[in-house]
Length: 352
Image (cartoon, rainbow, N blue to C red):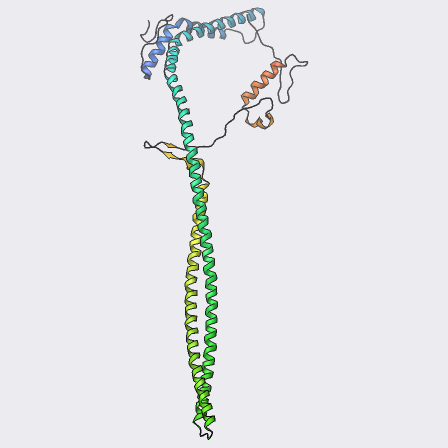
């Protein structure tokens, strides 16, 4: 009995079209069909397995050893025949797999090559974009630093002018005080002279002299009142300027602080990673950027420091290297020797 999905044993035809996935019932039917097709081979292997149970647990005679050797050879023949049947049964599927792989691998390989070409072209653009973006950000950071310096200088200048205007205000208030004191003294003298001039003085010349002195004192008092007023106005103006400059100083100082924060932000932006500086986004949502990674370009196995790589070597690779060393030194006197390895010459049974 041969299922339509299982070709004859000696065929060389591609397998019949089957769905990419099979339900459990179909898989069981396929397994049963293959088992029936190769029932004689499977039966022979099962017989050899059962024959093993008839062997004695300990070989104590030449007859026992001969039976064991014969069974060993028959098992080897059964295994070889089974492997041949397995390959024959899977050949159509392996052929189909090869055809499918060839069908997809060629365009896939071409796509991979084209991807490399695209990446190379895009990288040229992204390198230029990242460089341009970094230069622009560095220029922006430099401008912000210049703004910080300008603000700090402006604040320092405003503070210096404010201090000077406060000094001017103090000087003006001092002039006002002196003018007021001198005015008060002149008014006092003028009052005394006026009072003296009103007394009965027979000497007209003396009376005229006192009157002239009183008039001069009054004139001096008027001048001092004017000086006092000017000094008061100057003091008020200087105080107002100092207050205004204090506000300007605070404004420039706060502006310098804000500019300094912007400059720090611009510095961080200028030091951004290549991925951020080169990032692009397409209309379809693709995001491209530069990435950094390390690659092993070459390894000189004759000079590489293996002691530093010990922790990174896979145990299988170490075992394989130890085996090759053992085979190269198996004829050395006393056998191969290698620190960390134990080599032992063992005996095995050979049945021909």
